[in-house]
Image (tube, rainbow, N blue to C red; front, side, top):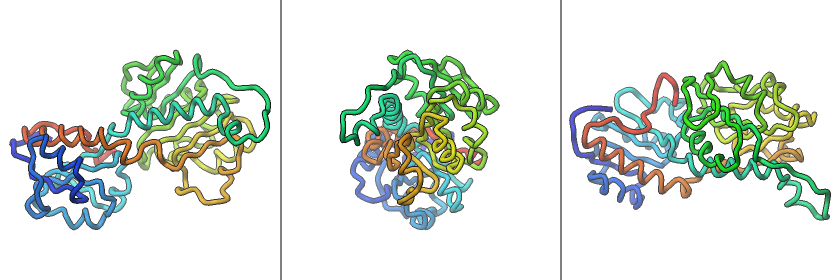
Amino acid sequence: MTGTPTRARVWVCPERSRGLEDAVRAGGGKVVRVEKANAIVTVDDDVELLRRSLHPGIRWVQLGAAGIEWLLDAGVIDDQRVWTAAKGVHARPIAEHVVGLMIAAARDFRGRICARSWGERGGRLVAGSTVGIVGCGGIGRALLGLLEPFEVRTLALTLAGREVPGADESFGPDGLDRVVAESDYIVVAAPATAETRAMISSRQLALMRPGAWLINVSRGTLVDTDALVFELQAGRIGGAALDVTDPEPLPDGHPLWWLPNVIITPHVSSTPDLGAPFLVRRVQENVQRFARGEQLIGIVDLAAGY
């Protein structure tokens, strides 16, 4: 977004979100009621409330979530104003979670933490392994930094096929099979779009190395769940560490709950509390940019769907 400089008059939803209201003021904006606003900052998941709030004077909407497919599906996001998602806001918390899942997988934390007898020795090092990041955006870049001390080989795939600083090799979508086939840990962090649905299918799972782990911190729909269960039950791959599932929440009694080579966390790789400090900084920066008529950070690409 570039345009005529104007002070941001922002409705913050839910109201009295003190950290966000303070961020608006720190950025030089003014917190106002929705009918007087030219911008909205929202962390509310009430789709209809947001829809009703979009009067003609609203020029910009800042969302608190990075994934916005639910708003696209509801037909709320339009081309009448600029929409910014929280792209990158949750990158550091999620990247930390990925490192934790990698270590848990390598050292069999699931089995050892639940054990009631001494058991056998085992485990492996993360160091020296190959990590493939499928969808190497903000999360992937944060993960690359955290992985530096482990001296791993990193393969970064982006939907645009761009060169990723810090990665040993970079790929576009046509490199997916190679990334999967060469990785000991495959981290799925791509956005959820029609094009990425079930991008990790039976074909890709069959290409995985024996002992390799699939880690998904994006959306469950990016992985073919039935195909994953089949491979895990067969014991051909090392396992799966899933912060997201399809369906979600994962029903009680689903096979994934019972497989010994699966780690599940309930979509908590980042939470509103973990992401709050980063979102506050993003809101302050974007309010300043709005006032100067400059390009905002995290603009939603309607054509791409994220």
